[in-house]
Length: 125
Ligand SMILES: [Zn+2]
Image 1 (cartoon, protein in one colour):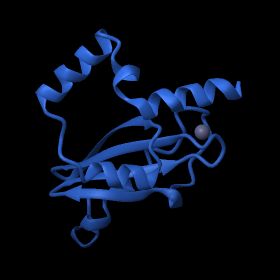
Image 2 (cartoon, helix red, strand yellow):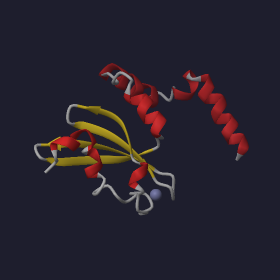
Image 3 (spheres, helix red, strand yellow):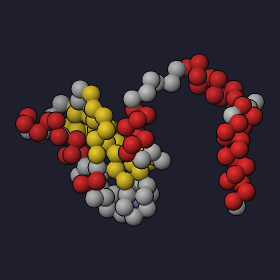
Image 4 (tube, helix red, strand yellow):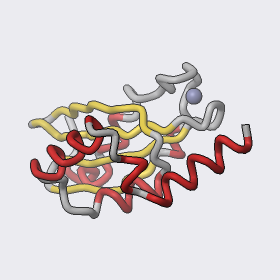
């Protein structure tokens, strides 16, 4: 049960169950967990592993008097997660166009910066 006075910080309760890095298995220092978005009874938190530098994003939701969480490994650092969380959601037309671009192999052709970046990184190998 979540005490009323701690509801704004109740996402920290879920850290008891999100205590191990899914990439390397190290125990998280939960003091590194940071809240980057919240709405109503849902909170989005970010944790970085000090051993492997892997990032983990979890959504913690208050359900009645309990907490539920689900998470995913991410390549987003805290700043990226906070920034991208503010963007408008992708709409269906953008997804369809993205799939079409991939199928037609247009990603590199249509994005000159990506093309030069690719050449640059290949050159370093
Ligand atoms: Zn790790």
